[in-house]
Image: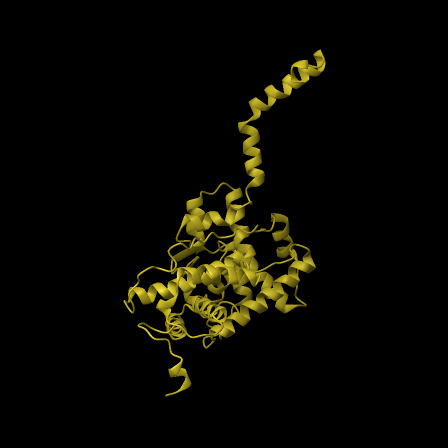
Length: 327
């Protein structure tokens, strides 16, 4: 008997590490690599929390979950990262429970409440977008490509980087781009504007399947992540050179399009459909703290009559002397 077998926990059901590896493999086979990465990271953190002691998946208790949450906080991780790890571990546990690999007496995650932190999202202003559109980076091709892709994203309903680099000539149908979002599978149809045509034609090549010179057919998930990292590094330099953002990334243009649509009083349902969201709740998360000037203006209009009455009272008092009732 090997040492590993001697240390194997007694009981029914799969081992935690083994089942996580199985779920990671399943997700990768389905093309859900981001989810697979989260499952793997969550499992590694939990095993580290358990001092790398092997355990049965069914051995997770509510106290362990609470303590694990505190452990992640102590590592200085951000709230949303902690939430992602906890929800990933819960998803793994639920998958095993749903397949009846063990009997659940008390669900360890039944008291877990996850509340996402809504960080301030800073979209670009119209002037900042124009600065990107009017700058010529012909001497820096990597910056020119990053800028063009960002502008294309903005003109294409804030198209995510993954969907943009996967576009092929087959996605062009007449005067529209039709594609399915990589994340949700929802079909998106976008009228190709003059600016979008200009960028498409700038990079078109008879020898390449994809519209833009980024993706290639045999690319692995790791290579895709390297492409995204390079794109974001180039964008950060563009942001610094043009003084438009300290942290310009591929997603900034998505927030920018959504923010501008909201400013133009486009209905939330329309924005949600354009972004390919499965829920308007996700869309509304894009607007936290973005509508404050508009809210302030609305409040001034709504409360104008009361404000004027109170202001008039102050003027009358100042003209007629101090009212001792308030002393």
